[in-house]
Length: 340
Image (cartoon, rainbow, N blue to C red):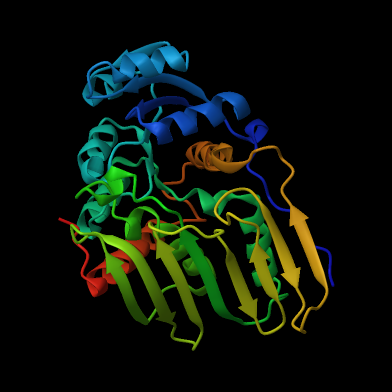
């Protein structure tokens, strides 16, 4: 069994500091600023929230120098280069355009929107304004995913034929997921296995799904099978009502990969030989960035892209983002979920 390649890691020393603003004072914004303050040289300047008192409380908790009660006030500042959008999916188009039209680069929490046309509008506006717009699909920037890309590119796996994953987390007690506009599970959670599969197989030619709906017709659980033009296959289980280890595997003609659980956070990757119970080689992430502290990798990548003058990420292009939304919507429509 060959030695695994070293991953490319986006690090603080290679990332020019940006001056950041934040839209939205929810838990994901807290996760973002926590890891940024611990693990980067990025400067978070201000927070804005339309909910009275939330911006001030956030600024006090995270020692931000200022806060605003409107997004327009924040982006009117000259000392803001980029904005992280941690608001609800239902208002992402509106708030993204506020930042983009002010000439700010935007890192937009996934899912970028719950509507394909809205996502297209965001990306078109960003290109017109010549600012970077990136959906925060943080898995693409994790070290184990870079190792996987290298193993596919150098032929170690042979032809990739099968991708299997699951994202099963008992989230019935999270009201947002079952409220129209809050990010249905198939988009909010399902975007992870969808994007994971896309990294290895591209876009499906066939999608077949069945599922279980909540009492208000929003999806609770989805089982999806996909086929690709070259004959490769994929399947995943997405559940917001049951919990299983968040597992993922990729099988090729010469070998296979499995990812440590949960596969979408910094964990590990194992290369398996093609024979039964064969030789294995494992790389374990020892960078000290567990769980959502791993969000910092995409922040460093974003800062590097801005310095390079890129308008989209080569690791997660606008078209890939749009394709994943399209796949999620197709799956949701097949099982009859409500989006509006």
